[in-house]
Length: 144
Image (cartoon, rainbow, N blue to C red; front, side):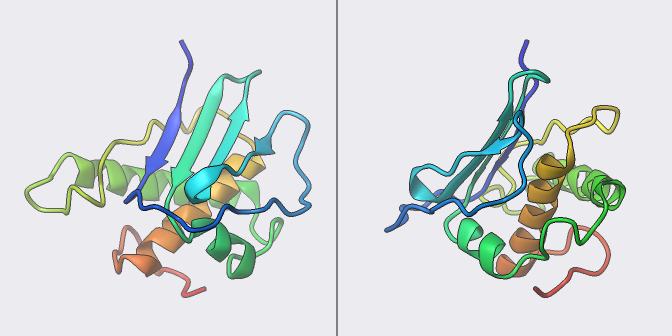
């Protein structure tokens, strides 16, 4: 069965499609932008997939996020564990947290090495999400 990591936020119609920029992906990790500002990363060898659908995320990622390599993979993995844990907790409490923001749980297994690119994009989505929707999942959120 295919393991999946999905992050879905409010889905809105975007008036543009994003362009890829040159970045150091491995041959198995590929970012494939599609319509409606969707970012998809897939690795068939490890059988995982990340889909991020949120208008403005790609633009934010390429203009405001820290560059690849700024944080170590270990740093990103540790932050993602905290963010995913809090996110999943909020999904399970729709009476307390907006179910339109926290639509579905994220299947992130800390025992799987997803690689740098996946952790980088998940981490940056959480930063984007917290700053855009004025949410605080864990700790201090960079204002980038």
